[in-house]
Image (cartoon, rainbow, N blue to C red; front, side, top):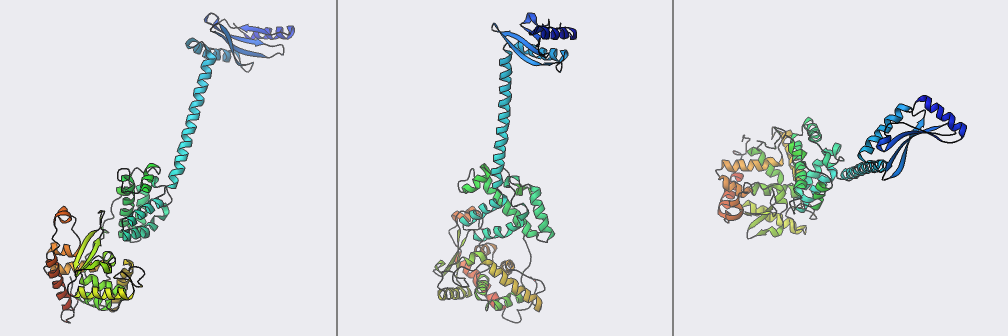
Length: 446
């Protein structure tokens, strides 16, 4: 056994004889390995783990004495002895372990590098860019108004717009929604929620829907979007867009009088009234070539339909007169659009909305109205009045182009209700003419 005294004596001998002196521990000698201390003439000493493998001798330097004391040397030798017991190629085993360790380190580094690269790629797929993809999709579907609405409302997403779309949480969106609610813009909050949800839904279905753009698919495959955070948001109650504001007879009469001098916007207001409350966005898409056989055929792209549905409206009575006025105006401007201020582009629905808002303010200030009204209230007013005139609900639906999503209406019912539509329009026009009678043109609640 190696002891402190034997080490001291061996070092003295090595210095004196100017030759290496080896000390061996008895442990392991008969097992193919041994622990040795090599004492050098310089006065230093090195611990060695020596073993045999396939008839050859090998050694592993463990450390120098005295920093590597006897107990440490024996513990280290025991570690290598355990390896030797399982595999006599100790150095080979150590090299293999080191290579495996390095391979694991390399793998982890490559993994981290891949994650970092993926992160950089996902950072490019921001919420702002996702909304742009959705806007372009809507434009391709010819849903220009919806696209413009998305552009307008997306400004409220500014605080989170540069965040990767895959990292947007429902908490992020709730914060935006809460800010809008605090501003009293509940309807805006709900519309924005709907648009964001639709943008994410477009991405999520892109893998199975060939009609979805490839740019939306990229947000799923490269951008990492795999869920719809907006779908988890609650709709802000009390702001669902429904309203019971109906114009009084006096308001409607004076609105029509004002509209006679309102240029293109006023003409559009008169047209939608005498055409039984057509959606303004659809009406403003109308062109001179959409008039044929005393019908104005509008295109209704509303909803998820791929092709806009044809919506023919008979030009009866005042409707015929007003649309003829629109045609004459279009010809003078050398444009195809029935409603245009300059002839270069069709009238924007926002222009009509602003026009009606201005009249509403004027009416409130003059006492004609007790509360403001907006363009959307005009359509509701006409449906309410037609209901009061006993025009059947299904005929109102045919005239106003809503509630026609059923499979029967889409595929089997070829009857376009021409006679019923004309009769309903005549009934409505008769009532509108009655508003010119001072006895009837009084404010009465709906």
